[in-house]
Image (cartoon, rainbow, N blue to C red; front, side):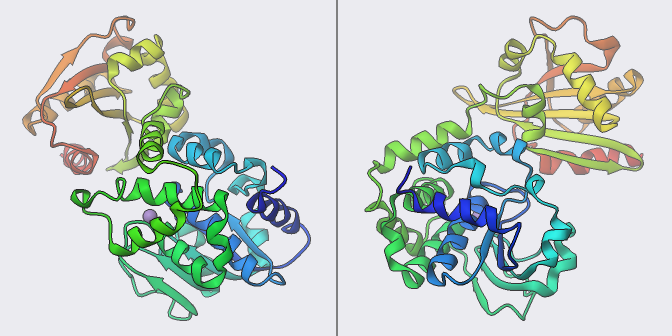
Length: 365
Ligand SMILES: [Mn+2]
């Protein structure tokens, strides 16, 4: 660990936030996926290496406890030997107080501030991103917005210009290369994500890693779908969106495992759903479970706080063509007086993006 320059930098940056003013705070997007987090760390490290006098700090815009939910990020960070204690998460700081000491904001992997950061729009000084350019923050001095497969590619390109010796750092390369591989589906042309620039940067980084491309990619991909360390609450909040439809609060989780497997992990699944609903004060909780076993499949779990609502909602969803077929899970007793039920979803085309407007219709009627 002694020769881990990235960790040394992160440890220093974390200590310094308590004493020094911050020249640039580097932040990824709110979803905090691997690309966002890796890009923020690597870009902050690059800026710091290119000007040692500057105090550059990366911030992960999620709480520490949520990091493990991003199982692919946890895996790549681990392969890169990153000491998580040196990484700064949202609950390690007081954002409002910290921002008073921040001079410039560097946005990576997004080019529009999240709602809670909007008050700091005048501080945006740099943007490195691969999403659609929304044309905001014209005052930003550095503005690299290109539709490449991964923001990590732009960070990698930037570091070869700003600080060429960093491209040889095996830990940094492992972090960025893994991110590019995941985002471009292993640089596969048919996935329609990879660009010549992703390939070029990937080739540069690869030489600094002692890893086989296919083996590394498959391991990251496997980690992404690995739910063995996650309990029901983690599975529900991992990829979760909450909606308000005409005064009804509705949570829709997207999970990556079959309900039969979830039932084996948690024999008290119905009760766990009820606890989750009570904590979030929901009227309806839906879990959409998509997985490949061996064919692509979808399951649906529906919890309604009001049992009378359950039948009506299911009838409505059937009319909308979801083709639900009720399944009975081994360990679940008749579930909480008709509040919870589990289904196989025959219509594979209905994702959360399509389900939420349907629910909006339902509650409007
Ligand atoms: Mn991205």
